[in-house]
Image (cartoon, helix red, strand yellow):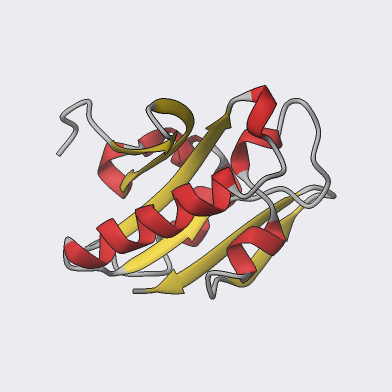
Length: 130
């Protein structure tokens, strides 16, 4: 099913785009499976309707104001409208420049995600059924 596509949510302030959230089905976002730990864990659940939320981007002037949360909430609503399933994400425990685009554990917990496993000191796999 590799069609070179995924889904995205744009967050606006008035008419200006200020944030973005990428999500898609497992087959649409296969790079996650390049990590050996992730590949093993994704085999544990049904491949059908496995969604991933992989990336957030927020304009510098609008960070720490709930923009990523708004994108996450909208992505979850879109996934629900498209039939739902299992949604997984890989937020960071300790935000760094390299991991800030993944979102935070607290943000995903507020949407009902549960921690599945930690990878090292800063990476977490979280899941939720929709």
